[in-house]
Length: 293
Image (tube, rainbow, N blue to C red; front, side, top):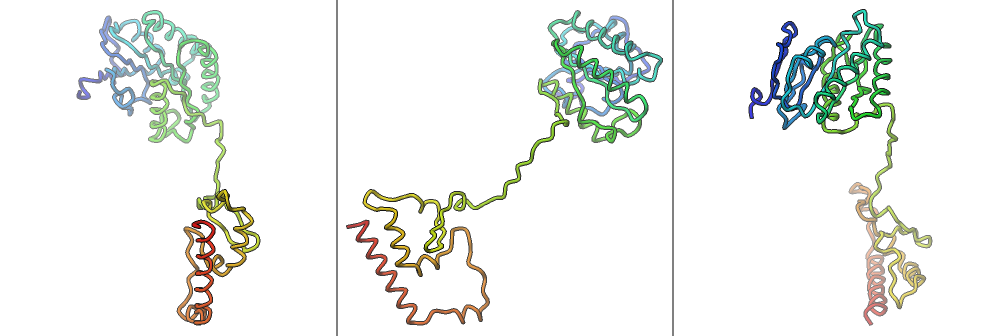
């Protein structure tokens, strides 16, 4: 379905809504100028969306009174920031916001109503914004009205005193979309604890050190004794054949790099090689006797 078929757009601020206008949208978005860069189809996918530009509380009242919504499932409301610049008090703005929400709920009781709180401002009206938002949250806390908080949007996300920059628009859209799908908004007040644990090789997660030979055994060599073998017998074998075990490297580790001269100087003599070979043969015989015979 194309964008033109899926979304009904009305970005005109100067043209007032016509009396008894019919709107067939499923999701009705009433939003001020901070929603101009939001794509309604991405915000509310799978729904026939009607975006209506709504700069002030007066415009919201006229739209609700003069429009017939035939199949509304969700109302998403965001306006009131511009009204702070008028002569209205905080109580008047809060009262009119409540009145609009009440009217929508009365006319369309089966519809979901999402009320977006006011965005922060970069001027002396920002404190009033906080007071109004706090009052709205308390008023609708026990109702079915979903109140969207924008705690993740700061004054740094504004390009002027009240309009969002690119990052601010993305965060604003994210908060609205989470509300549309019934998710809680992100809470930036609670700092998550970081769990930065050092990464260890798997064989070191439960390692056991043989104190007599200083040999680190991988996990599958630990605590695995047969019925006819006592753990102390394994220590005896380790002590008798220390050269074999001490020269073994742990898994996923490589021997330190040595230069050619160092390697040549550390080569075993023929006598040492024969001795090691004899010890290995003897070890094989002992193991064969214990485990095979």
